[in-house]
Structure formats: structure tokens, C-alpha cells
Figure 1 (cartoon, rainbow, N blue to C red):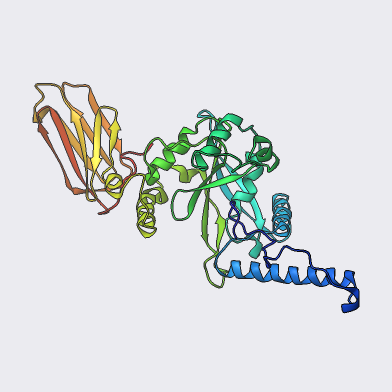
Figure 2 (cartoon, rainbow, N blue to C red; figure 1 turned 135 degrees about the horizontal axis):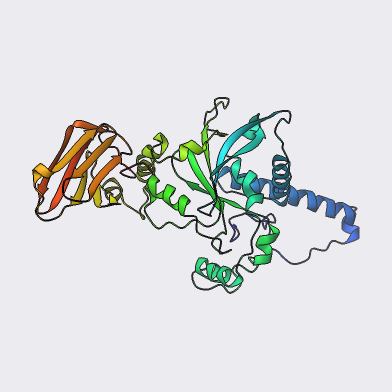
Length: 371
């Protein structure tokens, strides 16, 4: 039997007979103490067999001993300092919620052996998310939603006090195959401020507009561990502030990677592939859209403007648009590259249409221009 929290209870019943068992002293020379010892040993053995069976069948089982060991290991990891023997460091990035606060690099310290395999940032960052108080009313509403509208005793221990006692908890949000964001798992329930720069980053990675991230956000990178025999373990490696640039290679490939992941997992919801690969947007005096092969910029021009009044200059990473007799002078530094031989423009019904062929066919641009 699995509990409502996803774990298997330790005392798995092995007998349905609840009646007390009595034994005449004349029929046995085994002492009561021996019976209790035997019963305890048998019960422990059956519990172990039950746990082994559940784990062998893919069920996550966490015992009190497991939890204590995890807590001890986490405390030890969080106490590591730069220069400690048997450790290594890596860089990750903090995106503060405040727009005026500078994006900075942070240093993580982890074990250099197998203890440092798998993503260590959730454990390292947990104390960073300990501050703040969960709103009791918001938590109750959240519990009721999870319980399908009926929360009569379903989550009796999930209170603001219980959450605070656990300390902070980091939630991982995938940005690409090897880049993740890390946020306060209950940031929304704490009413932490919206982080617009984190939302913009997620949007560029294909998650669309309007995804709300609350509080300070961290960004880190993983890569396969070369020391892992199965090469399936990942380790934390450097992610730098300069890689926050919209033109960074990992950002440009993130949309495609997420589409492939979505197709692999046969998931639906959110933006579908067609919406993402054809996504465009608005700029200062223009709109743009795309398909897998081309980009199109539309610029409204005043009545009376002729083709001879328009100048469009194409370069692999930029396009300049000027209109004589109108306040239109655009110098767009493109997010990625275009094939200049496949670029052209036309004027029709008061709209200047600039068409550009992508240098990399099938590449989805998360934005038209670099920030």
C-alpha cells in the first residue's frame, strides 16, 4: 500500500489476524521475551523484503533513516567552502527580482568525487529560499485545489509553520537540455515579487509570454559526467553572466530542444510546435513574424511614400531600414544570421515588407533582435 504522499509505509501488514495469540506455558518452554524478539526480527525481515520489492518495481520509498541521512548529507554539502579538500567549484547566475539589481555570478562548491554527481544546486540553494512567510489563506486554497476541491483532512500537516520548519526548497525549471532555472518552490504562496527578467528568459526558450516566476531566480548548467561508467550522471559546470545574452547559442537552440523533448514525452499543453516556430512580435515601429525558413518585418509608412524613398541594407547579422520623408530609421542587430542573397523587400498598401531568409533553415528565433 502506498501512502497519499507517494511513499510506502514501513509497517506493511503481513497478517490479517488481529486477535491476540495465547499459548499455555505447559505447551511451550519459549519465554515471552524470546517470542517478542522473534516477532520483531520476523517483522523487520518482512518489512525489508517489502521495501526491496517496492524499490525493485520502481516505487520511491523513503524511510525515516533515509530522510535523516539525506538531511545530514545536505548539511555537509552546504557547509563546504572554496579550497576544501576533495571539492571543486563552478559558477552559476543570480537574477534578482528587482529590475535595478545587477545580475551576478555565484560560486558553488561541491564534492569532486561521485558525491558531486547529479544536480547539486537544489540542495545548495535551499537556504536561499528559506526567507519569507507562506500566506495561510493562499496555502489553503492551493491544498484544496490539489485535493480536487475537497481538503477535509487530505493535507492536515501542510501549514505555513510546517513549511517554514522544512527550511527553503528549490524548484527546478528546465530551460534547455542542460540549462535550468531554480526558484523558490513556494514563492507564489509567499507573495514574492514577479521576476520579469526570468520570465523574459523563459519566453526566449519557447515557453511563451506570461509565465510568472516569483522572487530571486538562479540559472545553472549541467553536463554529462565523463567519470560516470554509464555516462548517464550529470554534474554542475560553469554558467556565466555573459551567457544571459539573447544571442547566446544555448538560447537559440533551446526552443528546438524543448520541442523535441515535448514530442519525446508525448506531452500537450502550453504552446504547440506550430505556435512556437511561427512566433513573432512587436518592435519600435514594426512587427515581425517567422516560419522555419524565413523572417518577415512589416513597417507601416505614411501615405505618399514611394519605393524610391526607401533604403534597405542587408548584412548577415543586421538590417537597416530608412524612409526619406518619414521618421523611420531602423538599425536592427539581428539575434542570429540571415542569408543576404535570400533577402528582399516590397511596398504595398502603405506597408513596407522586408523578407529575410534564415542562414540556418529550421532554426526558431526566440526574438528578432539582440537586447
